[in-house]
Amino acid sequence: MSVTDVPLDALPAIPRPGRVLLTTPEHFEVAYVINPHMAGNIGDVDQTRARTQWEALRDVYERLGVEVSTLEGASGLPDMVFCANQTLPYLTPGGERGAVLSRMHAPQRKAEVDHYAEFFQAQGYETHGLDPDLPGDFEGMGDAIWHPGRYLLWGGYGYRTDRAVYERLSDKMGFPVVPLALTDPEFYHLDTCFCPLDEDTVLIYPGAFQEDGLEEIRSRFVRVLEAPEDESRELFACNAHSPDGQHVIIQQGCTVTNGLLREAGYEVIELDTSEYLKSGGSVFCMKVMFW
Ligand SMILES: NC(=O)NCCC[C@H](N)C(=O)O
Image (cartoon, rainbow, N blue to C red; front, side):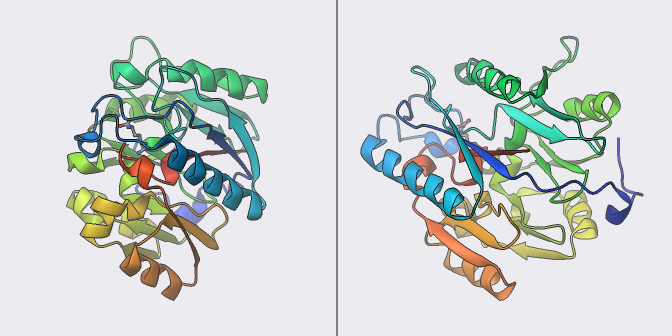
């Protein structure tokens, strides 16, 4: 599976996705604890604030010229609003659009996937579940993140996704994958500690990785910006998103991280996602990009 020997510029170029899917938050709440951030927050979501924060995110994507689609959240699925997790949309170098469907780790989230399968099928996407003989789980773009502009998948594993899933996706679908072990339960998805901004630049929290993973990251990105521990843990600094390689949408208050981003030439857009932080999610988790 390793693509260690293939330099980034030898991998096929893939255009950045120009469309974003967001799921409406009327059923969002913290109703159970499946990650350490949720502990102590059951029943604490302020629905009005959650709606206002979600609308602000939607408005930013619209203002940046990203085509926004919305899916209605479903009753009884309080985490469905985190729409990075149920699928991995892809565009192959040959131009085929598809989506790998997740096998959610937490039983409480399993029923979310069908809603997204229907959405992507209606967009003309081929959808595929994991092979039934393959044990293990996969949480879509929570853990599997495309390198901006290249046909290369970064694959986090350890808490929600199993490493063997990447081996199968690589063998079967031809995805070149760099697996990355996650080592801290507060950074339970790759998108909590790894945020590629453009082909050359990534924002990470290094404390969430092993040394060999950090070497893989440093060997493929020209610039590695390191968010400090407090902003990464408490404010989800690395759960930011750059839809265009110029703007970075990020939880408000990440002062040190924002300084690094501005120094590197990005325009920072701060948003309040505090209601979603109670569930262990922020900007990156609340959307899925597709072509
Ligand atoms: N990190 C993400 O990609 N998604 C946030 C998911 C939060 C949700 N409460 C969960 O623990 O699955």
